[in-house]
Amino acid sequence: MSPGTRAGTGGAVLAAAVLAGACATGCSGGGAAAEDARAAPDPVQTLRQAPDVLLEAGSARARTAMEMATGGTRVTIRGEGGYDFRGQRGRLTLVLPQDPAGTDEHVPITELLAPGALFMKNRGAGVPADKWVRVDTATLVDGNLVTGGATDPFAAAEVLRGTRTATYVERTEVAGVSVRHYRGTADLALAAKSATVADEAALEAAAKGFATASVPFDVYLDDQGRIRKLQQSFAFVNGQLGRTVAVFSTTLLSAFGTPVTVTLPRPQDIYTGRIAEP
Image 1 (cartoon, rainbow, N blue to C red):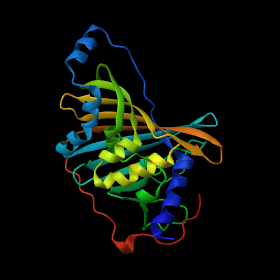
Image 2 (cartoon, one colour):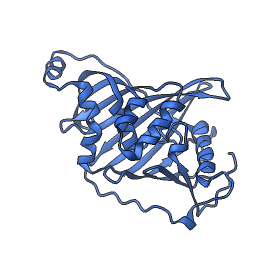
Image 3 (spheres, rainbow, N blue to C red):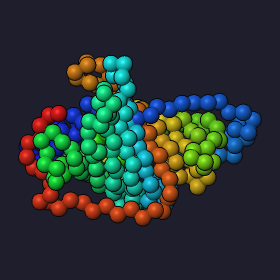
Image 4 (cartoon, rainbow, N blue to C red):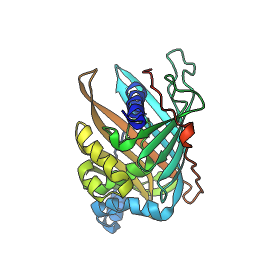
């Protein structure tokens, strides 16, 4: 078994144990919203083109959240960092949930996102503190849309290439920025056909591995067409629970154009041993 495959198994455990996110909410629009909707272009085409707008923007600061409710408890992982859309590389620091006593149970995990790969440091579960775990994202059943505890910001945007239905909701604000709110559903298999080469295999894996290839979403675009907020709901089958579980992912983007430098680990810094289950 390859190191990437071993790491993939460990990464999946991270998601199963401490998944997180934020789910979409809706609101009705008044007369001003109706007027804005008439002035807006076709929602489906607008959203399918949103990833290309991010490529033009170059880079941004990113915040992520992933949430799963299980056993009456909501488990949330939050991430913060930056993303280079043109290089499709990013760096996030993930803060894991506290233990029931309210004290920190986990050291924050550093994640490096790159085409076809996810690198994790402070992964725990027997991995030396100075080593990185490498995951081949195309080998994951979810294409790393949920496994790492944070959805790759550009992969999340590329899901919109598979938009099948979309409606304009209203004009609102995200972090003080005026935005247009759209709600719709995307198809992962369709998204894979139009995705960049770096995300094609991962989205194809997700389309086959999730309980359904359909992804409900809410997205907020600024007047330049850039994604400011993207909320998505992914469904997977939990073997232990024996039922389909929804995972809610939120991606927030800001400070477009902020330089983002991501240096990937050297081969000698990547852990190739066995990863213990947490």
